[in-house]
Image 1 (cartoon, rainbow, N blue to C red):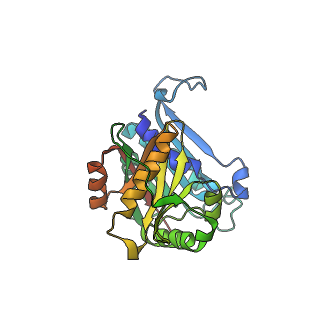
Image 2: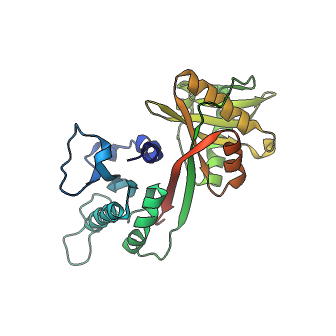
Image 3: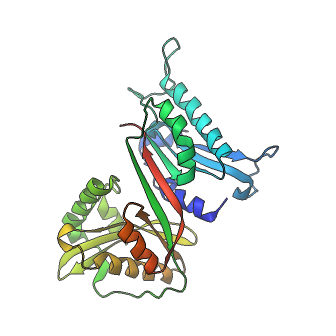
Length: 283
């Protein structure tokens, strides 16, 4: 299994909601093995044809497969459990404590895997097409690219709370992804950074998932009144410099529909690891 494929999933696995329901045994880690092979905890992930994290109460799954056969098996697993959870007429009802159980809502993972699973998943939720689809390029900064510390970039402070709440709200409206309900937690952890344009917070970004060899730069956003001035690029370069000081590789995601941003990152020396797709199957 490619390291890039696993990296595309790691962000979502690390940020599963921590509500009380998730203290229950409700996480399914599913591995698709090669024929006539048993799984050993001592073994390596290279022995797997596919892997999935499925969270029934959240009606979401994160998937990665190396071939269509593995993708089909993951889809079969999801389909069986979703039917059991929802129940149907004539049985004893759904095996869930949700008041109004709903079908699978989110499917996230390697773009090729999601595409292979999507037809069966749409049948499961009785839809002809997905409600919404976002595909991101997952990119890593090349080791030979020189970046440095920028004087206008600083860690976010508690007094930036109003701007940071606006960042969270506008990012959700424009990108369709909501994150970090309490932004001050990230501030206290020293993982939120801003471009300070003469005392005004012009652009914001954060350290997202931290892996043994990588740190993801996430939530990169420039407020509309400050755009087209290169602030996001400067902010990203500064965070890359800080990440490298920890002897790790910076990674980030770019919406594939944002062609100018993707081309800019390529010019700046970022290389593609893979593609990550998120599909909203139902509302």
